[in-house]
Amino acid sequence: MRKISLLLMVLCLHVVAVHAQQVFTIDGYVDENIADSCYNIYLGDEYFNIQGDEPVATVPIVNKRFTYSVPLDKITAGRIRCIFPNGELCSASIELFFVPGETIKLTVRNGYYNWDYPDSYSRKVRRGLHAAREATGWQSPHLPKLKGKVWKDVAHVSHESLDVKDVIFAKDETVLRFTSDSPLYNMIVKKGTFLKDEHGNKYGLKRMVYGEPLDENNGPEGKTYGVYCAFEPLPKDVKRFDVFAPDSYGGESVIISNVQKAEKQKKRKPNFQMNIQITEGIDDTGYIVELYNKHEGFTKRQVADISATGKTCSFETYIDKPYLADVTATFPDGSVCSHCVRLPFVPNETVEVKVMNGRFNLDGSKFYKEWANADDFAENSRPYRTVQETEELLKNYLRQHATEEGCVHYFVQERLLKKQALREIVPQEVWEGRMKDVFQFLMSTWRESRD
Image (cartoon, rainbow, N blue to C red; front, side, top):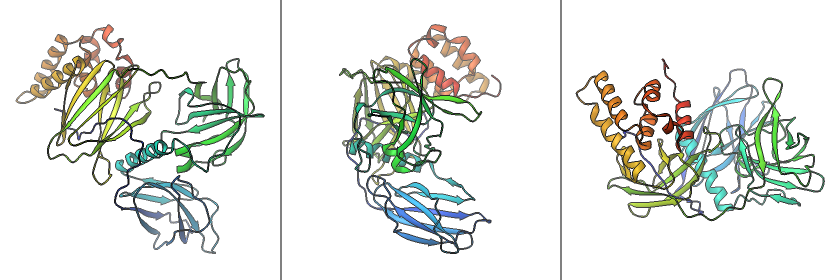
């Protein structure tokens, strides 16, 4: 079947797994016109908070290069701060996630830095952030204690990398707790950010309650637990509001819309199930699952990190519509696979997944049987045939199965035919059916030379 390194999932553990120590390394480079003489290294506590002025190490710069390594048993926060030739400590610093078993390349420039990291680093960071939030219930002793009515876990639509978790209606101000599910992106609250209620009234940003100053990037602690920003007080009877920020064109644009009190979640019976069989010789010990955002398809959040029991694991949940999911294997040493597989999760369906070395098989209920049949046909259509012959076979197969959602999804996701051919063969009611949002997302990420 698909020749992609596999992975899969099941639902959330509220435990942070601790593994044997592994070394984290920074390979550092300093720009030729930079006069830095050495760097102080600081480490954070279990909540990614870095306090105190005592570094854990001072690393010299030799021939415009520096290296720092530290054994770690779990992800933590780290700060890098330069010392000038006169012994003065720089006021600015670089804060990063320090990740066991990973090496990053860091180049220090004049007033900024560039860095390069493997995909496994980013996956471990997202996993560590999710695990810390789950283990602590999103709480840290360093966070401010604020009084007032609270909207917790608010409903909202994020248009950038910022989210709103909580809204606190204090006596003389309204405080938003901003978070991010993109821990390797910048997390900046801009000067000039404001709120606008459903009547068009604006409420300006007063101050940062907790987090880095305005227009500055927040570090691992802020990205994990959030930052708090105080605005002019919203009316007590406000029903919803939007968050606006200055844009790069000199104007202002909405970055988070339709912020409102979350409806009480009804307990719903699971309507989606995944059963996973791990074949002999495969070392997968668990799976991470990230769902693509229901509103903005290009962002995703981790929803699961579970250990397998023996060679099987199962997952069931309620989903309100089809979602794309990236599913990634984890290994005995706590590392995360460098590849993932993208699968559709479809309501009222069950998928059976068989994990093998470098590939996987899907089967299950109607949707996934259609997917599996299309996969089999596509694999069998290639040997001993020209590209043109294979393409004609695929077109004929799709014509015969054009109303099958699982088949169409497979053709779209695997890009087996040109977009124009897909649009001509598949009926409009399928494009506009329950898989509509998923199809639109997949097509929007697909660039053809002639389309």
